[in-house]
Image 1 (cartoon, helix red, strand yellow):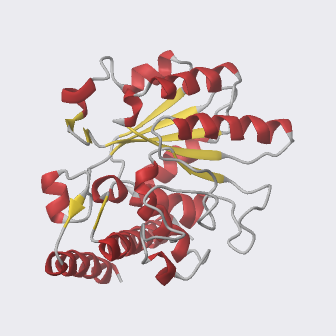
Image 2: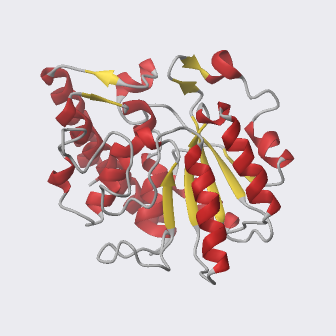
Amino acid sequence: MNREEMNHSLKVFAAKIRLETMKIIASRGNGHVGGSLSIADALAVLYGEVMNIDPKNPRWERRDWCVLSKGHAGPAMYAALGLKGYFPMEDAYHLNEGGSNFPSHTDRNKTIGVDLTTGSLGQGISQAAGAALANRMQGIDSHVFVFVGDGEADEGQVWEAAQFASHYKLDHLIALIDSNGRQLDGTVDEVMSHGMGLVAKFEAFGWKVIDVKDGNDVMEIYDAIEDAYRSEGKPVALILNTIKGKGIDFVEKSGAHSSTLNKEQWDAVIKEAQDKLEALL
């Protein structure tokens, strides 16, 4: 597959992830739309091209891992997993129902294909660092990818994990920082500014840092991961400069963290996602 073909294939996959994400959240009537949509492109690159996985053997010990430290973006991961065949896509249309295997935050004990349970912000990156170290100790040469929100990076535990990963030279740990500039109560700069910025901050903790100017461009993400693979002796942080709610107009404009809509509004959102997918086909 040449670059043009790959670019088109990954854009289509990202559009499918967005459509299914909206269907999943609409099944509940409310959910974390903004942060789910902003990582759809990165999920498409990971599950569509990069990661070494086997949907028929989800716990294959030599697989690459994908961890949502920002676990509230679970619907987007469920969409990617369903599209890859880990489970029938329709199974995920029971988001956060009683007894559902699809909670609003990812849970490895409930959902096939989820590598680690997350949702308490800051803890997912710590678990991912532990998984990367454990793999190395077992002689497993796979990568652990972990999504961290820029708002989540307010948590001190994120930086404890960053220090741990640097100390143990976990060069098979790749953090994808969803830097969309917004969090629950406002902009990241208003709520808790990162001061020197996330690039300088991760560098100060001893990480190799790649600043992805358009974190919603599938080929920029792919190239950054290829660059990350060449890192030796350092974990890698990809700073994905994304748009919260990317791909759905009203979410992009509002920067909504979570949305509750009526049926007519959800129908319109799903139609928009469907139309954008069909435009690529």
